[in-house]
Length: 174
Image (cartoon, rainbow, N blue to C red; front, side):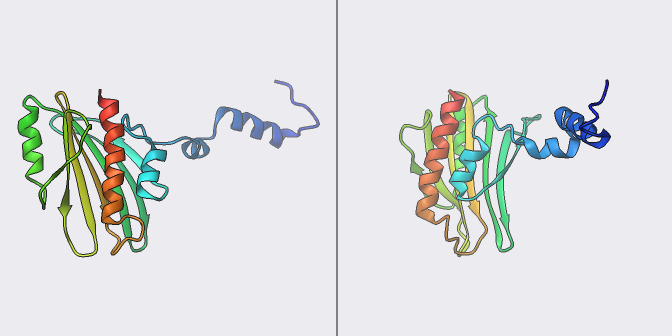
């Protein structure tokens, strides 16, 4: 490969390296999230901040999991989605509903059935969960803010965001 004398040796190497992709640069150039049910951009909108996503495929008895997180000095906001297949989906949904700290509220028009409830009711922090199913697939969506008295994710806002996330997840499971 002949080099153009106007470019100089270092510039030619840089052009070649950028066209092939530098290992450190490539990692920052594309999203690491491969969540099949929700994009990082949508998750960031739900959390109210830029979130980083990670996907863990199902393995053995563990469900597939997408986790979107935004950390601050005072705490973190996390959106977690799990999807699993069950032989008796209704029994599995009932088991998950028993983890609710309060009475679940039905979410209309989401999958075959879906409910939302509080999971952790510590003062000043919140964890809300949606539990639903689409045929034999059970999904949970957990939205947690560990920031005391979070100004972005209030309980009312979280319920609306969980509905939006549940629409997306259930729609992608059909």
